[in-house]
Image: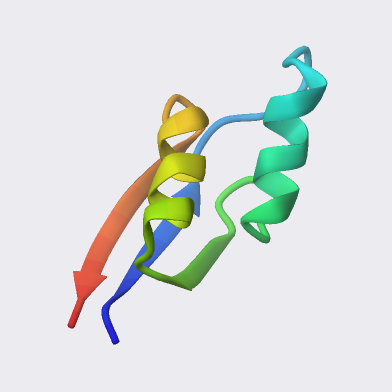
Length: 61
């Protein structure tokens, strides 16, 4: 199972509610928090939706 490590680098303040909800769905709600998530098309889509607030640190196999 492949995983990706995602880090929140942007604040959700003054962002649309959908983007804040997407961050919460990814398990990110505080600055500089990291999460290891399963690499699925759904997760990739969520990361793409808030790409200006998160960065992919590492991709693991």
